[in-house]
Length: 164
Image (cartoon, rainbow, N blue to C red):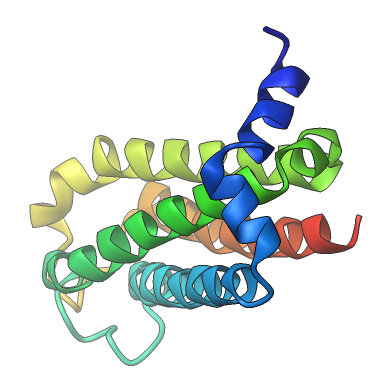
C-alpha cells in the first residue's frame, strides 16, 4: 500500500476520527505536545549550556547535570511521541504533503544522531573533563551547538506544519 493511502487509512481510524470529531481534543493534545517540547528543549538547552561553560549550571559536573535532566528529557520525549502520533493520525495526509513535516523528521533524526554521537563519543571520556573548572572538549561543545541549533529548527519546522 502506498504511503499516501496508509495516511488516508490512518485518518479514518477511530483515533483519527475521534480527534477530528471533537472540538476540544486536538487543542488539548497539541497543548500537551507543546509542553513536552518546552520541557525537552529546556532540559537539553540547560545541558548544552553547561557543555559550553555557560548558564547557571556551569559550576556543576557534567555527569551530574546529565543524570538530573535525563528523566525530564526521556519523559518529555515519550509525551511528545505519543501526542505527535495522535496529531499525525488526525492530519496524516496533510503531514505527508508538508515539506515542513518532512524537514522536521529529518531534523529530529539528525538531533538523535547528534545525541548518539555525543553519548558514544565525547561523553565516554567525561571523567577527564567532568570538573567544573575543566572546559568540555571541542567535540562536546560542537555537539552542544548542534543540539541548540537543531532543536530551534525542529520547533520552527513544527510551527510551519500548522500553516503550510
